[in-house]
Amino acid sequence: MVAILLIEDDPLVRRGLELALTRHGYDMRTAGTGTAGLRALTAAPPDLVLLDLMLPDLDGFEVCRRIRAHGDLPVIMLTARADDVDVVGGLEAGADDYVVKPARPAVLDARIRAVLRRSVGDPDGIRTHGDLRIDTVALTVSIRGEPVSLTPTEMRVLLTLSRSPGRVFSRQQLLEEVWEHGYLGDSRLVDNCVQRLRAKIETDPASPEYVRTARGFGYRFGR
Image (cartoon, rainbow, N blue to C red):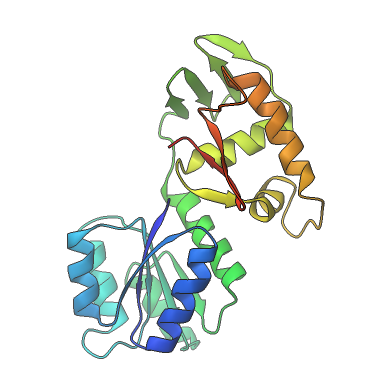
C-alpha cells in the first residue's frame, strides 16, 4: 500500500483528506506543521508527500527544499494559493506537482498516481516477482521462463497492478486506468479480465499469488 504523508495545519482539511484518501487505498499519515512533517519523514519515510504551502512554522517552500536536499521523494504542493508566482515558486522549490484547494479526492488521487508513475520507473524495464517476469519495454510476460500470451487489455491490467505491489486498486480505478479515464463501464469487465489473467499467470487461479482480491474493494498485486 502506498504511504502518503499529509502536512497540513488545518485540522478539518487534514482529517477530511485523510479519510478520503484512505478510502482510495492509501496508507495515510499526517502532520500539522512543517517541523513535525520533517520529523515524520525521518521516522518512517513515505512514498509521497502532500504539502500545504501555508504552515505555521516553516512554510511549504522551505519544507520542500529540505526534502529535496535529501533525495527525490515525490512532493505535491496542496494549497489555496493559486497565483502564478506561488505555482512557479513551488515547482522551483522542487515540487513534482501543484494542486489548488479545494481539490476533489478523485482528482487528487489521479494526480498522486501520475506523480508516482513518473517517479517509480523500471530502469531496465524488467519487473520480477517470484516466477513471473514482466518486460515493460518489450511488453512480454513469462512464467518460469515460458512465454505467456496476454491480450492488450490483460497486459494493461497486469502493468497497472504490478507497478505498485501491495497497493489496492478499486475496480473503478482500474476501469479509469485500463479502459481509459472516465469510462462508465460495468465493473464486471474488470472481474472477467482478472479471471482470464489469473488463468494464464497463476499456478492456482483459485489461490492467486500475483493478482489478489481485496474483498469488497478491488485488487492488488502480491503481498
